[in-house]
Length: 257
Image (cartoon, rainbow, N blue to C red):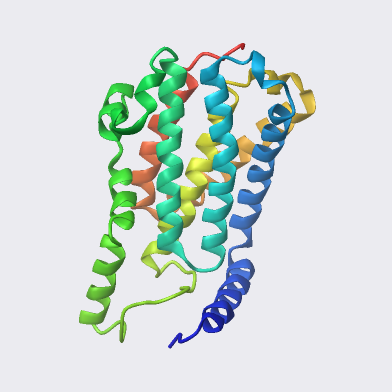
């Protein structure tokens, strides 16, 4: 039983060590691609932003903010907080939908503010139909709906003596674990595909472009299409939704200024 902050920290270190020993491949894929995103951010964050039109400035600022969210979501996974990681990944998805929207409709920026941006309505307008996994992510965020439900089932069936607290050990038997690591990787992938739309000048750097093309290909075919796709639902549900958003993203014309 965890009784103090120190108890949490001791278990976090234990879970992190176990995760790195067992799932280091996931860590390598995430970290290499995350550092590629950081290199893109560093590229444009040193430039004069004043000549960019405001929609481009909005997207670039959001990419900078997303880097912190992606890193925090990853950190939570390493320390065994899978439900909490999923809550943050939901916020990443919402930000990506906003950026896809403004890149397709740059003259409708006022709709990004407050209650004017209703996620379900904008998904429908963009043609995003397979957002069922967004509903799953929302259920984690809305009062821990799914985690509580799963815990109560486990207690009823005698698989657990009580409600889970603190860091949880990684493994396929953990319902939240697989969802957390897969959706984080899905939306890092989508972030990298999207970032070259407002920043086509990134690809003028041949070294960056070559690294980008190599890592994106490896991420898609060696991790997502191979590892994730062998695990079935809910991963296959999420992958259909991500593919749909990617297809829409790839149709966005590159922004020159």
